[in-house]
Amino acid sequence: MAFQPIVNTTSWKIFAYEALVRGINNESAQQILSRISPANRYRFDQACRIRAVQLAARFGIQSSISINFMPNAVYRPENCIQTTLAAAKSYNFPVDRIIFEITENERVVDPAHLKEIIREYKRRGFRTAIDDFGAGYSGLNLLADIQTDLIKLDMALVRGIDQDRTRQTIVKAILRVCQELEIEPIAEGIETYEEFRFLQDLGVELFQGFYFARPAFESFAAMPPPLKCPVFV
Image (cartoon, rainbow, N blue to C red):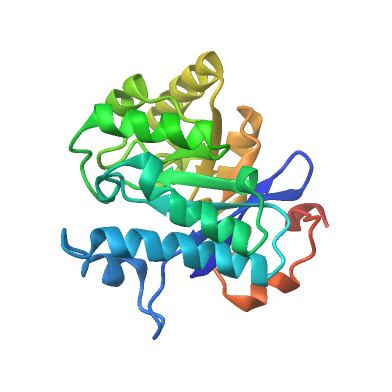
């Protein structure tokens, strides 16, 4: 696992760290996920959850952690969540600081089942998010059926948004929907000051991307808890 911070740019503190899958030889997430099949999907999903909680506790993370999960790997949410609960208890990591992101890597086979998963996770005290909103299988149809606590605006929507009127119009509409549904947006994939500032002016507070920090392993722990935007230092 590598960890990348999600920054609250109102308080300039770390809101959460996303736990990102990496290979033992630093293979990319895409390389690892390409090896996942129906036969090993459940074991992989459970192993990722446990490892993320274990490392978050080891590194002394005081903010939340965000873990991607595969909806099609969850056969019964009340049973499949037990290993996560056990890991949180074993490593003394609070459940209310765990966020589960619905990954965009696979099509949701049964939306009603996913709705039940989200309901059970919320009942257990976890927060939930839709990852890469606006790309792949994560779109308005999913949001119509499932309201999570957060949504992450896909990087394809925010790339160059300061100069792209079409993207500006689409993102403004999504943010209005978030406001109506009381869902907090996260802008991911931010690489420039101009992208960040345009979205901040629209009211977005939570950001993730290379502009703030790249994914890292143990070295991320050296980052001071209160952050400052480089342009303001």
